[in-house]
Image (cartoon, rainbow, N blue to C red; front, side, top):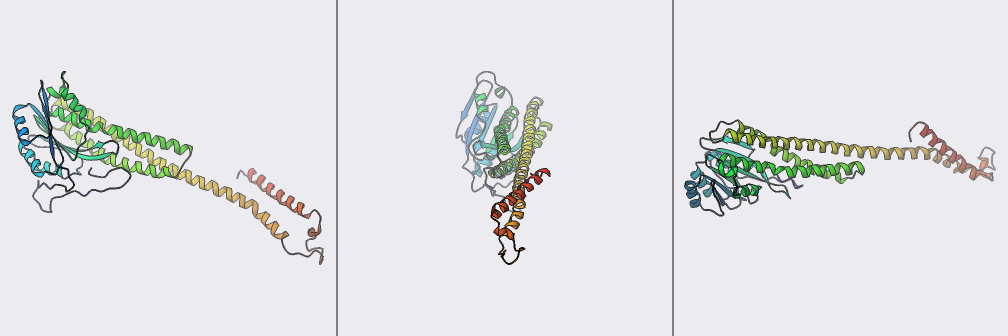
Length: 364
């Protein structure tokens, strides 16, 4: 993805950028980009075909023979191939530059014959791996560019395969673009829900028995949630731009569906923000509980010290080297047969008296 991977380690990817002063629309491939492969989906009201590892000749032929095509380019290493796709569909070079320069903020741009929409998606739910995906759609085509294999589009492909009446077969490219973007947005819900379950579990453990590892767990989740927030927040603005556009290739009926996707994005943003606030509150609560526990321990040690200070004083007095034979004032208790038990009894009396006094003052 453009920003980082929330797997507990901070990682920053360096992206290939055109040289300073280069002509606008210059395409520079990232050295780590995957090799490009084309997957072609051909759609009509009565039939559909799926062509894996398609060639540019297949794409050009499909443009003339099918009412709606979806071209999915997986991998961004082959700049020449991407430029040829741009030539076939008349894609703007500035938008193609944003395709290969991954790390773009979610946005929607409009050109004469097509729209450009870019966002980040989760292509591996187990590791929460992100990547940038770019959409171009006009009147009869949808072109998507992915960084690598793996996407949430299989349900959309299944709907295209369905033989019974399907909106994806009977409507134009704007509805197909909606279905794909909606699938990307909905793919965030399992990640957000799983994060919420982890936060709830940590909260229960924290209230029952706080442990030091809770802090590191909460910090890791908060970092991942902050990344989600940075990803989802711009998505709302991009969807709003799509809905408010007056492009002729986006129908009013499809805007209603895009508005539903916007509602999902808003709900995700609100949930993520709520989780983030909850985690901050739990971190503060953990610190407060730790401080309270420390104060409790210090208080107990202070009480114990307060009890033993006078006893230590008495033991020090009786432990001095006095000679009772030289004077009656030189501690006559040293020759008293009951001096030892009397001294212990007096010390016990002092200790018990101090405990009762502390309880009376509600210090214990």
